Length: 418
Ligand code: ADP
Ligand code: ASP
Ligand code: MG
Image 1 (tube, rainbow, N blue to C red):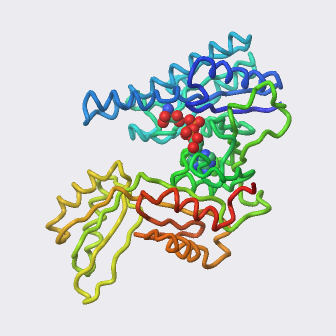
Image 2 (image 1 turned 45 degrees about the vertical axis):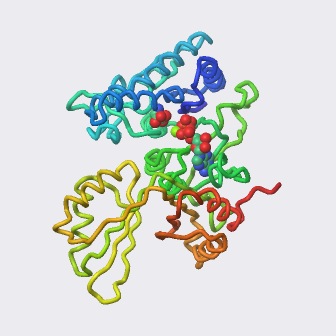
Image 3 (image 1 turned 135 degrees about the vertical axis):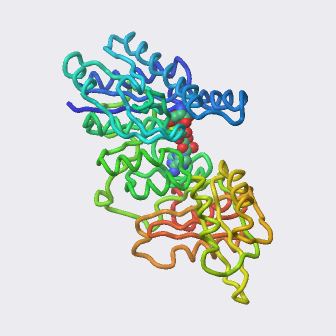
């Protein structure tokens, strides 16, 4: 007997039939004797619809009201699943973020969880074997009493945080794929499912665009040492042995991985924008005059490339920002023009970032160099490069995204054997 968190994403709760299917998955684990807390997302498409409604009402809107609106999707599914479980004869109760409470910062629309009191849930496990059905994605900022949300994909983070708070043995993330693959299986049919991925690798894959897990959920799993298991909700609940090992991917510490490739996975993101500030003086303080105001505006700068000036006087500086912040970033740079002293700004939004990730890179040289050669053979131009200990990223024209991902996937020996 153990304690489990089971998280179901949008496609897994897309309609009543699927919610009933989820209820049967939960019943299987309850029948096996486990304490269960379930975390649910909104029905697929619902959050997008709610975000759209907020935007339509007013493009510039109050983030506190945005959160009040978008948190409602999860409220509906938590109630529906509680009913579906009760209909199967299981004691179940729904919980909104504020009811537990899941306390967060006041950074509306991208709040961080600051604390969860799991004692009431644990008490109910012990007294009544009651299943807790928790609305993912949302929390409350205690000082203001306002509802907050955790950023897109945030139900993953709710699930791992709850697993830590109730001392669960495992956090199962049920989704529409049966695990974490070497790259997005919807883009590369030859992608392979990985049995195990190290937390550090998953952190890089998620932050470089693999949306199968929200970045913060992986951070929390690492910090609190919660084993996270990614698996499919589409497997028939009745066919699964609750004591067996189902297909899926375990996110775990590096030591638990016996065999590792140099490159574990390829991630990509089209949500990037490139800004080049042309003809700036090559002297101390200029970079600070560009990146200082961007940081003050809370804009995350990712890749940075500065040309070495030929005459030692003037140079160009290129960097990338998330596509959602592109207009704001342009605005910040325009406002700081006098201080920076540039000639002009060039921009591109049709760019993509391709990243190769693997802990094996720590002990291998020349891994990225092979990618440069393979991409040049396909005439794919590289606009910018960044590297870190276990990852390198390349900025290219978005039109070549799929070709570049497939090229690197094959190059590093990740293709599934057919
Ligand atoms: P959920 O609604 O269950 O939270 P998401 O849509 O957020 O599901 O995440 C699952 C999706 O992530 C998959 O359908 C897949 O297209 C995408 N994905 C991207 N990269 C990967 C990867 N490396 N492995 C598995 N899935 C990936
Ligand atoms: N419903 C939210 C979203 O679509 C949270 C989640 O599904 O994880 O972003
Ligand atoms: Mg998700």
